[in-house]
Length: 363
Image (cartoon, rainbow, N blue to C red; front, top):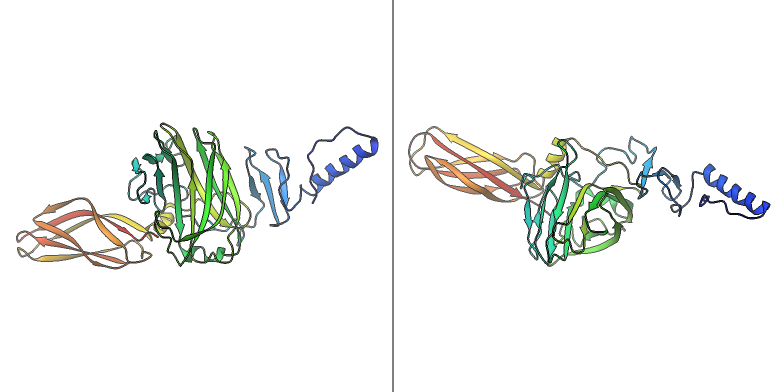
């Protein structure tokens, strides 16, 4: 280890010389050590000998950013982020509309793959985009008597089993108008992909910690040893204390990756990210039309899902159904690839119907 506080103390000639030699050693070795230097400034470099990685202090002096990482197969390889929709860009269910998170209720799915809950009093959640074409954030707005907010994602076993027993890094860009800390917690499912409910969880905590946050957005990161038993699916949850009236919590660019380095956020192509989301939830408009029909007859409208879903979903109609010479839409038998819809013919002739369905196979 060769580190220094970069403050040469007054002293005798020999002690000052020794201090200067130690400082030069820290510079020569890039502040090498098994842990980060105690004294830090923006732009400072550190050679992390534990993870064999070069890191540099970010501009806010709140965390370390990987430098000179291998691109092919290394920390900057594609699809390294195990979080889906970490950039908060996809919202099939709500189209980014404001959403009430009901205190004491079950998990409420918000933007794709993310759920929220709260205690004490309801809060609202919605897309936040301060400038047109700027990055998308997810923002919670508090209420009087609120006592806490939770925001999390469950990662399917097939997407994270290789993280078991490894050092992994969680990072996110976070700010709040009032809160000064946010707690992160990582859990493993007790059995494969079975996390239970908010009221009756079936999971085991792996690690937890706290980020000290401010009203200015910054990137925060933490290194986590997942442990050898983390082969059954992972859950990452951010929780806060009371978020009171008009107070906000804003989050984006959440990343969970192998290795002890917080690499730059991975921006995937939109269609790729959407397809990943649709493994767990699909909301789509269907329009059917037939030109002949017998009164009272039923006709089948098979709808192929955009991608095979994780499991056979639960499906429901969202909003009103538009009928023309038809009635009684029923969602018939379905599997993880096709939803069968049945419409009853009202009279012979052209028959139309349109509706939106939501298919969910969330963890």
